Length: 597
Image 1 (cartoon, rainbow, N blue to C red):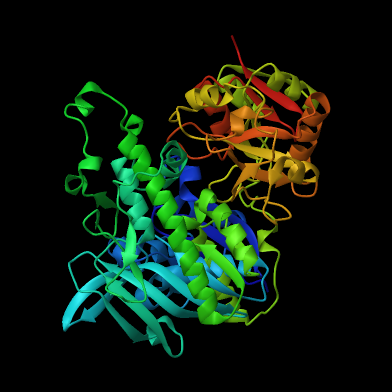
Image 2 (image 1 turned 180 degrees about the vertical axis):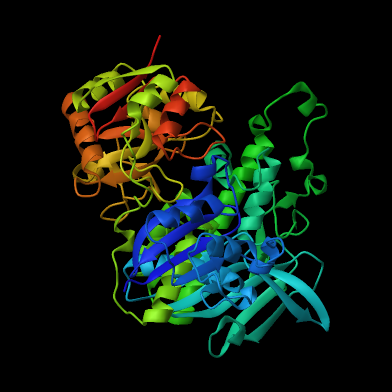
């Protein structure tokens, strides 16, 4: 009998990961199905389990608060997810004590641990030190000076060994209400672990919350920190803007400047611009409809938080290695998606012989996979290492049997096409959407749900940003044949970067050859690809290289601004219909879809 385990995560980046005997069957975020960005409550995703099995051995639930907080089913009063699994027949329908259903495991009290589990099991390391840098993880009530205070996980350090020895060593926890900073040793039993771990608690923002505050101040939703990362190179060192982090009264941990950043746990934080003349906004600036990102103080603040935060995470990595003695480091939590910081660490870590694995699904979507993998190892005691990180193509196989109907539905037409035809379109300054195979897990498009362009056009970034309805400063990525990667980019000791997790420096003379994917700081978020990793994509880039002598294509996610990546063929053609993108390449069936004139 096969062992079926589904991990789900409830909050933003809600999603489901299904395992069969420890192998990932699929991993999908709810937003890909519902088409609503950051959608929570993965109810649609749970129904997809039925495409593979009609029974689960375990449903493992991840979030930051207990599953009871998710709401109740009318009359039967089981929680939403137990209730849906029961109604779908995935778990035993005859268990009446739904809060104690033996097949439903609630791991919401160990949010950071599930980030660590996802990264560790996918890293390929025999053992590792996990560093988690996150916005606000599990809600943890704690007694401080005889007062009960609600705190949230900010940064954590774990020691990781097979099969399931993921042990908490350190936590920095933040409180919304003013409290004096305290350091203590806490019993780890509540996490199902032996011994005690170091805890530092204060009422300031953590690393990610500080970044969120700047993101909000720059005019974005606090969850859109990637935009701040893209804006940061437009700024400069400004001595009138204070540092974000400092030693806390001589303690061993560092905290953010509360005069500058006011945490709003669990969601977001605010910049207290009134305390600093440098951060003031000109009168009537917003009334005139101006773009706040054009202000030097916003740009300089974005620069400051990028520099300060990546330095803090590097310090935390060194602290983690010192605590464990283990130089295999895995990094996850929301800050793990900061590809500028990830590249920054490399030289510093290489000097110390520290090996770094950055989890590509570092967002909360990764906790669904972490929950499933962790509980698989709890149940089986299995010490086998799977090649989990070998591929991120973990969505669903596309269906082409209705392609003609979809073409007619969107008033398009379809024709035969090969790679050479697509390269011709790219060289004629067309954006070509690429749709094939299983969708990528995580936020990066890796050639299965991508928009492609010729990187040699000098105005390419501006053109594609307009078509995608993105901000002017947002950079783009490139995909390069691995055989040529080191000629074009400085990978700082990495053999490859297949998951687009690093914004790397280009080699001398490269920038003028591919200007549309080089950011203002001379970097490029790059993906290396081999024939084994993605045959169709590799062959297309190889044909582009043959015709242009450039082994790189401009690659960005197949979506419009504010929308999730496309999942289905219907999503793909509809996106063309609603935009200025005219071409959709389907290499698995050698077809090109175009809009009718």
